[in-house]
Structures are given as C-alpha cells and as structure tokens.
Image (cartoon, rainbow, N blue to C red; front, side):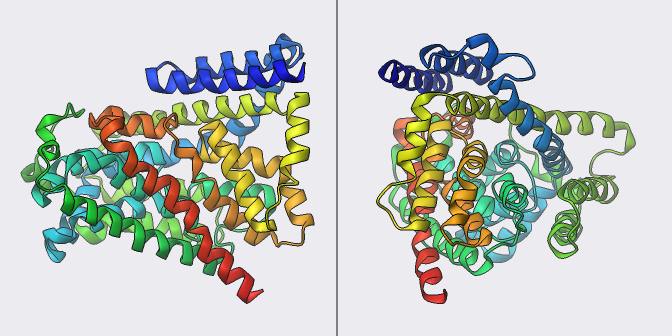
Length: 438
C-alpha cells in the first residue's frame, strides 16, 4: 500500500504540473490530484473530499477563511494604482530623473514597492506588463528577460524577505507563530540586500549580453494587451507624491501603528479613491474599478486554497506520516532544516503561501522546540518558501510566460536564477549573521 500511495502522490503532482503547462483549470486539477492521493492512499475518497470533516475542504476553508478578504483588498489596491495611472507616474518620474540607464533597476524597485505595500503578486503582472512594453524597448532591454526581471520585482525580496512586507508570505507566519511582520529585521534586510546586489547585477549583465540578440525585440513576441497612451496618462494620472500616499499610509498603519492588515489595506483603497478621484474618471467609474479589482483577488485565493487542500489530503496518508518522521530527521543544521522543509513543501505545492501554510502548521511547534525564536523561524520560512515554489508549474510563472509571449526555453533560466536560486542563496547571510549574533 505504501508503494501505491507514493505512486499516487507522484501522479497527483504530475496532474498539477500538466495542468499548469496546458493552462487547464488548476482547481479542477487540484480536485483530481487530491482524489488520486486519497484513492491510492487507502482513504475514503468521498469522506476526504466533501463534507464538513473532509480534509480537502477543511484545507480550502481554513485558507479562504483567513485570507480571501486580504487577497481581494490587495488586488483592489492594485487595480486602483493601475487604472489611475499612478504606477506609470511613479515609474516615469523616477526614470526621467535618474536616466534611461537605470530603467531596469527602477522597474524592479517600483514593482517591489507596490508588492511590499500589499498589492497581490499575481495581480502585479497585469499592473507591470503595460509599462514594461513601453520601458524595455526604450532602454534596450531584451524582451525575453521580462519574466525574470518581473519575477525579481514581485516574487522575491519584497514578498517575504523585507521586514514589514504586507504580502501573505510575510503575514501567514504572524498568524501561526504569533510574530509581527517586522520579525527578524536585520536578517530580512541582509537577504534583501543580497537579492538586490546579485539579482539586479545578473539582469544588467544579461541585458548587456542580449542587447544585439535577434530575439531581443518585443515585436517578435505575442504580448497580451495594448500599448499605453503616455500622452493621455501624462494628462490624467495623479502627481508623483500623491501616487505614493495611499501605499505609504497603508504601510505605516500596519507596521507602525499595529493596525490589522485588512483595515490597513482598506484604508489604502479608500485613500486611492479619494486621491485618484479624477484620474479614475470620477464616481461614474468607481463601480467597475471596484468590482474588477476586488474580483481579481478572489480567483488567486481560491486556486492557492485548492492546492493547500491537496496538501491537507496528503497529510492524512500513511506515506506522509513516514515522510514527516524522516524529513524532520534530515542531517542538516536546525535553521537550514527549517528552510529545506519549507521550500520542499512549497515546491511540491507550487505555491509559496500554500507551502508556507502547510509547513508551519505541521512543523512550526517542532521548529520552536529546537530552541529557535519564533521571529527567526518566521523570517527563514518566509524567505525559503519563495525558492522552489517558482518551479515551472507555479501559477504566477505560467502567467508570466503566457502574457509576455516568451517561451520557457528562452526565458525560464533567468526566472530560475532570480526566483529559485538566488532567494535560497540569500539565506546564507541570514545564517551567518544569526550564528554570529546569537
């Protein structure tokens, strides 16, 4: 039975991978995957999948119950910044002041700023793509680098490394471990600096190498969406400093004043409606923007929850009990073991937040029993969940390639460097500092 169960779990992962590549509903794939796990694991499929005691629905329900409103508000904030032109204003102003040679760095920092302030990661692809279509050709940045550059901006240091980030990868540990978003600040800053130095440095090197590459031109790719009208944006988008206010206020409320994340994001959305009033076209357009933005956050939350549900069913099998018993005994130093367990589970689920939730729920108390503070466990797990999660079947990665028209063959190496290899290597300065300081 153990062998059959292992085969079933591997087959379930295969279903998720196939669905990601073929753009099949991930919710459908998750239901099939969970059913396979239950069937081959000797579990009652119906009991695991449906009903108030079903492991699959318990996993989904818990995740959705905790995070649905947060996802929706983060997506709404992103829509308000997108539709108003505030993102364009921030990017354009900084590039105009600094010069075109800094376009790549500014693009990364602007994307990171918006993610750091709470805009949902997947939504950020839609926010940044229109600006990349304008900025990259002007700066001579090869278009096949779009997935890698955007991956660095939205799915690495701003997501789970920087203390105070309002992303789920930094908020989930606060619910499970009782920490704050600014947990282990020095370690988080060290990891962030590592990512900025090596991540941006690698991209500038690749951009210089590919400047004359025949495959660099954006015209060779089937990119989704139209081209922004910069003259129109110049006329209606909010001023630079006004564009910053809602995001800065949200951050200060949550991290400075200890306001609940839901209230902080809601305040950012209300302030955006007030300060971006004219740019959004007045009250007559509020309804459509609010509906579109709020709805944009619901789907990603449901998809991640469906994958968490698969993990919940796996946790009911005898195989998982054996894995749990053995993975905790990996011959690794304690903090490295925390990172390894978290990133392995994130890689299996294809989701940073989903993997982080499963890892901390299952092993959080064990990690603390090893003598580590909840704060350092929070930061290490938040960083590690952003490593193997972005393997090719990750939903955000699939969307990056689908919307940009770039092929995996041409662009995934850069995504792997920026969102898999470097985030895991950024744990090195964290471990060194922790061992010296403590």
